Structure formats: C-alpha cells, structure tokens
Image 1 (cartoon, helix red, strand yellow):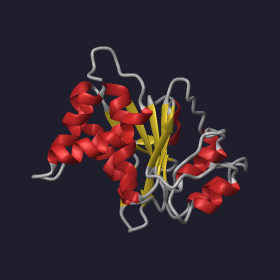
Image 2 (tube, one colour):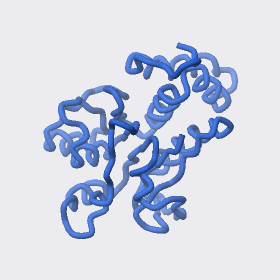
Image 3 (cartoon, rainbow, N blue to C red):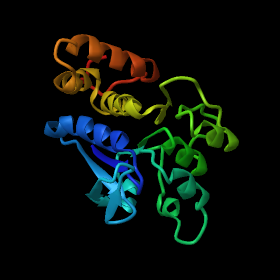
Length: 211
C-alpha cells in the first residue's frame, strides 16, 4: 500500500506527521506512507522545514491519498485552474484510490470535485469556505462514504489513518498498529474508541481480515 501524505508550505505538523507515523506502523505488511509535496522542501506553520519524500505527482499513482491542512490552503484552492497551480498536477481517481482530507484539506477535495454530494467534516475556520464551495459540513470528527473520507480537528488525523488501515488491511491489523502507539494504561480503551469512530463507515473488509 503506497500512501501520499499531501503536505504544502504552511502545513499543520499534526496532520502530516501523525498520519505518516501511524500508517507506517504497517510497514511489515508492505505499507509505505510518504510526505508528498509540490516542492522539494516545505515549511510547516511552526517553522519546521522537511524534505519531500515524493513529488506531488506521486499522489496520482498512490493507493491512498491524504490531504493535510495548512496556513495557505485557501490560496492553493483559489489558484486551481490557473497556470502552474499545484492542484492541476493532481489526477486522482476514487475508483482505485482511497482519498481522505482533514480540516482545510477538505476544501481542496471540494475544489477538485471529489466530494460531489458527500457531506464533509472540517475545522471551524475552514467551515465557511467549504460551505461556500457547496458542501454540507457536519459537526462531527469523521465521515466517509465509499473511498472518500474527511475529518475535522488537528488530532482527527488519527481517524483518517485508522480508516485507511481498516480499509486496506482490516480491523485486526489496524488494531495491532494502533495498540502499539496508544497511551500505556489506556491501550485497549483507546483502540476501541478510535476504531468505533470509523467502523460505521466501513462495510467490507479484505479477504482473510477480521470483521
């Protein structure tokens, strides 16, 4: 499973790094999540500069794509369709990819036409822009329909990661990966609560995986 964590300048560290760390817990099963950016280096809202592991076009061939949020997401969305726009480099296909977004990343899904009539989650700051884009915003941390998922709030990156894990590897594998990173003394309760958030949106599991 190849996963693109879309990360732009001004990115929220919690969005990109939590998803990256959690998804790579399935590395033994051949999973590889990578920071995917339009430029060689991107700097976070907190001033952390990282080197992209993959160019933006990697998202077009990845098995799963996660849009993080950031300070400049609205500007990126507004540039869509203009010469040299970052979003114009993307050709995503929900028929063969899992696609998720959180907070202002949801606005990018809307601009790309990937939400259609699917209600979505986002953060409070981004909500008016997503509504303006014609999307119904839910007061919930996570929502998915088919291969499209959205989440609201910085720490909701754990829900997107859990959703991708459960969809791609099954609930048992997801539970094992999440159990490792869960707080000591709270592991079972943490994993159960996290998976219970995404479980209603997953109706099938891979062959051989636990339901």
